[in-house]
Length: 157
Image (cartoon, rainbow, N blue to C red):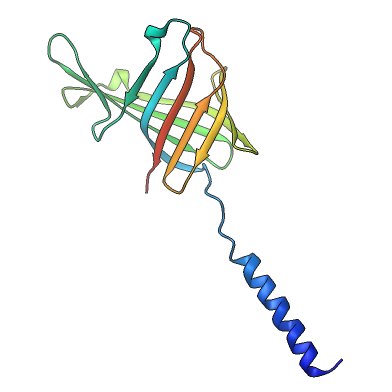
């Protein structure tokens, strides 16, 4: 085989390898996430349908005595299939230690974008969408009130 043909074959092989090796990795659910919204939908009693919107201070509500209750929620999804849910509860800006804490569970993901969350025997099955900065989960299983569960979260950088 002459040198010119060998060089062309090497060039074609290198170009092919370069094209396939430049493919970007898909975003992963592994990481730390801060709640953006938590939704309960499709409930047997429509008055249970609600969306909690989390701002910079978390999800906040005033009570009848004009106290401001806020909940900040974040989640760590680890590579080993463990997730840790962190919830901090504040009253008028002060952390309430007895109401705050962590919950540990497991998760699995399968193609195409199926996710199962297991938190102490409470199992949520659903679908997720992911980007570099956002994770959205829409559950298809129902809780004891017939509600489906969903959330949107931002990746902590």
